[in-house]
Image 1: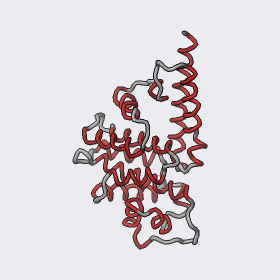
Image 2: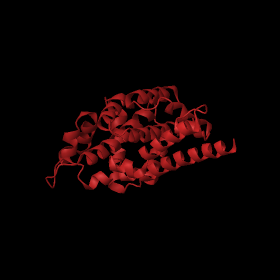
Image 3: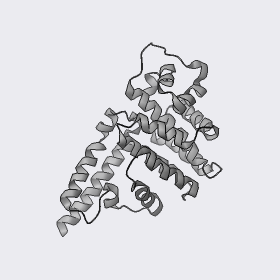
Image 4: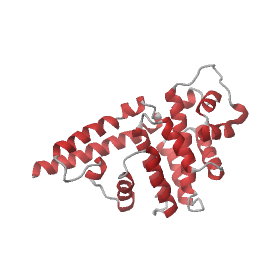
Length: 244
């Protein structure tokens, strides 16, 4: 983890506080310390909070229907080993967060609200966080009602585009590539309006912008995928516009 090298010890735990800092303290316990005496930057704290909240919310989503399925465990393992490419010690940490949050007293909403507060200035990171949650919820090929309720609550907590639930449902359930939905625009809008929306999203989701605002380096590939998705969607609409 990019924030790990900077020291995920006591200073991060104590300065974050809340359920996210609490789960860090519960896992690391007596090992919490500020080895080199340096305070972590806001980016480092936000990166730590992102991953701790992510695996805590993964646990809550996975157990929303009462049991954690084999498919969900495999998906979390895939995230750890392939998507984030964590080395062994950081894999162990992520698994500990997941296992602890699976049975702790903090709710999904508690973790989500704290993360939303910490990343209020970086809503694009919250959108990417949301998409990762949706991907896990579809690990077993279906969207359970309890999982759906949490995903809808996350939309409100993160204060992100309410259409993202249906957009992701189409993407993961029906496997549709709806260019208009990806950009969050309507087919009835003028091309110039669509282009302005595209240019804004292109800037917001540019990997360099996201990393500069605290997105962990391990999510760079995810950021690139999102950026390419936005670019491709606009190109499809642009191509259609030229044919008309």
